[in-house]
Image 1 (cartoon, one colour):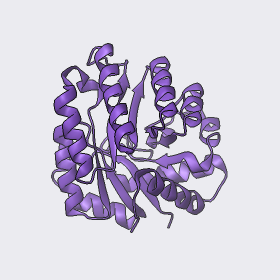
Image 2: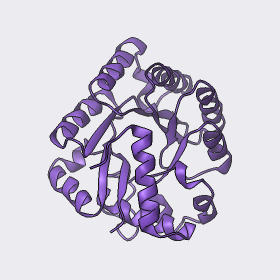
Image 3: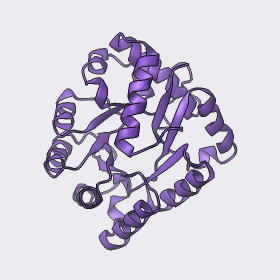
Image 4: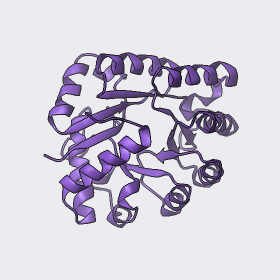
Length: 259
């Protein structure tokens, strides 16, 4: 059985309230060696921390402010809360970034919140988990600047374009693929073959983006095994080998000791 780390799962979401422990156990039984529970808001980070405490060594958590909520970002209050979460075990900052598709927050507010979280990463040495959608130019500019400061990060749920991946990889960042690469509309297996193996991460983004053949269902981390199989096939390598490499990448990136 190939192993994997789910580097991005929203276990604190209400979608898992009825069976969260069972979801976590299914992931373990399917080959997961760790789950990274995303705290996309200060409130979500607090819930994620509780989940991590209930599953020590297997579930880890992050803390940040999503671009959708950037309009309400308070540099003093929220930066203090993120730093406190990092002191209490958060393994990364985020999910943060830019989303110009929905524009739930003004773009200048999104850039300011993202910049503040880049600053925290620079100060603490903890990596960033970055969301970007239809914001290629500004994301490239901010990732390039962050990389020059030694800030590490991952572009989560990556679907392109390649020039954004080039910027991220040049900055020393990672690329994470989700179940989107199994969708019928996916047509860029060349992108899956292109990044070096040592920069790859895998994720579910559950409860969203369930991979084929589970489309239409609530996603869960156990199904990262499906995404791993697709990525390995596209790259022409055994899933066992790619799973091991991506586990090592996740452990190094987040500073995890895998169990």
